[in-house]
Image 1: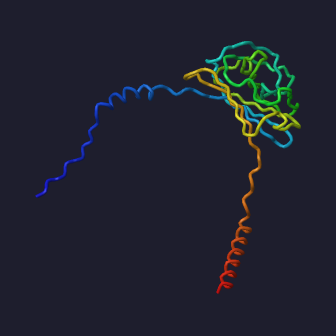
Image 2 (image 1 turned 90 degrees about the horizontal axis):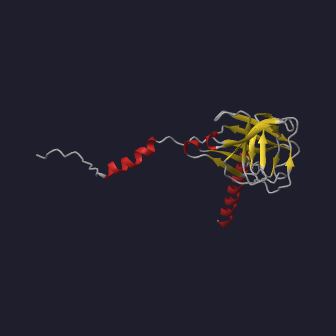
Image 3 (image 1 turned 180 degrees about the vertical axis):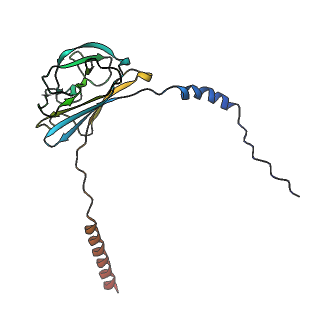
Length: 221
C-alpha cells in the first residue's frame, strides 16, 4: 500500500526579510506629482496653431516678478499661448527652471499672432531672458496646480518658417520629488500618411498573377 505523497514544500530563506525591508519604503513612498504643461505646435492650413494645457506646481519655482506688461509672441527662445498680442497680458514670471535656452534654429524670427483665434490663459516659456535665465510665464495670481488652457494662431506661417522640425520635442523641468514638474514643447508631425492600396486593385493584381502562372504552366507542358 502506497502512502499519500507529501505536499510540496517551498522553503523561503531569510533573505526575503532583507528584501522586504528595502522595498517596503519604496512602495509606501508617494510617486512624484508631475503635472506637466504641454504646448503643442501644429500646422493647420496656412496657419500655425499652438495649443497649451496642463497645470504647474509652483513649489519648486522662484517668483521673480509680475505685472500687466506681457504680450503673446514666438521667437527662437520664447513661446506662449493665450490672449491676442499687445493686450498687455497680466502675468507672473518664475525662475528655477532647467532646459534649453532656444528651440528654433532661426534667432531672427519674431512673430505675433493674428487678432483672431487666440484665447484662454496667457502662459508659456521664456527660455532665455537675455541673461541665460529661463522663466515660466503664468497668469498673474496663479495658484499651484490650477488648470491652464489657451490657444494661439499665427496666420500665414509654417512650422518650417519658424525654424521648427516636425516631431520635435523640447522639455524644461523644475522641482524635485513630489514637487517635480515641467513643460513640454511638442511639434506635430503633419507629414501625410500614404493611403492603403484599394482592395479592388489588390484583387485585380492577384488574379493577373494567377493567369500568368497558368499560362507559364501550359507552356511548359
